[in-house]
Image (cartoon, rainbow, N blue to C red; front, top):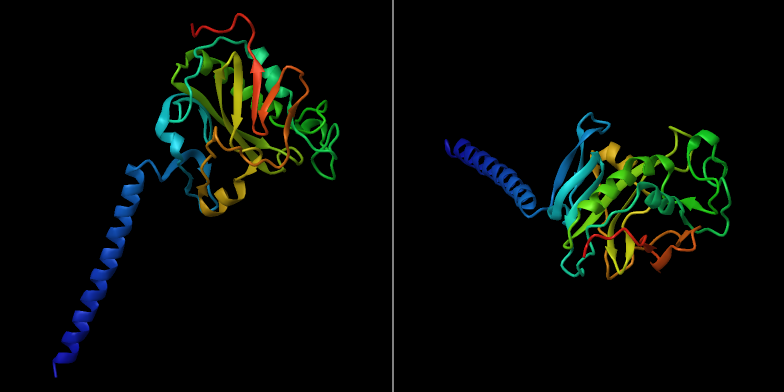
Amino acid sequence: MDSQPATRRASLVAAWLAVVGIVVGFALLLSGCATSGEGYRPLTGLSAASGRTVRQQLNESDSRVVQVHWRQDPWFVRRQTLPADAEPSRHPVDIEVDWLRERLASLYLEDEDAGPARGGVLGLRPAWGGGNRDLPGDALFEPEELDRIVAPLVLALAAAEAGEEVAFAIGTIRGGWRYVGPTTMTSGVMFVADGQVNLLLGDVHESYEGSARNSGLMQAFRVPDRQTATSLSAPLASTRADVDSRRTDWLRFPLPDTSSRSD
């Protein structure tokens, strides 16, 4: 008569052990991901709808970081070692902040339907909404983005070595009224080769805010690939004649004659 309670206890113990095994296995899996360089990192000052700190998925380049020159989570400018298939860079290099800003400010996404002041509500961008009204398409970088990243990019290029590149990620409200429109991100790498500053893009105006706030998880920044082009919604172009397009996601700016220190 005591066999049924004993059997029930044995079943409960087996079920409990199974649950413990699942929990331990999941913990080991997370530990393995963290050890291998995959996983997530907390973003300071960013909270999800639940109130928990938003975490961002790591990518391959996070394991190559040499020095962070500027960070305001989730945005950054940093030096990192080159990917395995990359030729050595011609670093360090000295360039002026205004020189780099002028070239980055000239970049836009081509769109045959675009015109000055395009974007925002009903195609109108208010004067206080940012943007460059002189560009024939959507600006790659808004003025407030350039305010934050140009000086750190110049410092990083001046400190970089031949085996390094400079990576960045930046974002702002785009395509809507100030403080109301969606926040999008743009990321990429910069390096010097063949007498030119190379800009290779990963993310271009990618939306992230909704998923980060709802799930508490933010996708990893896309790592630019020197062998395969990133698919963009529209080709990149520049209002400057001296900006060369090597690929749809890869632009080059000839250096001033007195800029290089790599020799």
